[in-house]
Every structure is written in structure tokens, then in C-alpha cells.
Amino acid sequence: MTKLGQWLCGLALLGSAWAALALAPPGLRLPAPYRQALLPLPVYLLVAFGCYSLATVGYRLATFNDCEEAAAELQEHISAAREDLRRRGLRF
Image (tube, rainbow, N blue to C red):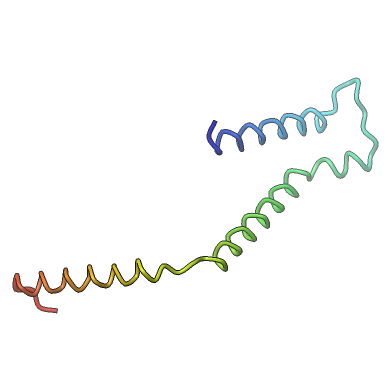
């Protein structure tokens, strides 16, 4: 199962549990404080997911490694391409 499938499965599970509790089936009556906390729960989870995503991207960006060997190789390729284009008559 792909990561997207896992996330969708989890969201479907949480969504169905939330809907079952929020729609208040006849045999289940939640106390008022629980009901007040339950109704905006999807918004809270969406905000928490956004914060987690932002923190993850920030951490990965802060710990991003430079590849000096790859940068030098890329500069060599650029120099070779420019030289080849100069031989073919292109001016920079």
C-alpha cells in the first residue's frame, strides 16, 4: 500500500468515527462539553497537520546537505557545454 493509500485509509477511519459521534445516533448521547469539543475537531486536526508539515519542511530545509562534488561536476558540464556552443558559433 502506498503512503497516500495509508493516509487516505487513516483519514477515512477518523472521518467515519467523527461522523458517527457527531451525528449522535439514538443510543448514544454525549455530554455537552464533549460534543462542543467534538464538532470543531476536524479543524483542529487540519491545523495540527499544517503545523506538523511546516515543521517537517523547516527541519528538512535546515538540515539540507550541500553536495560539493556534484556542484563541481555540474560546473564542469556547464563549461563543456559553453565551449561546445562557442565552437558551433553561439556567442554569449
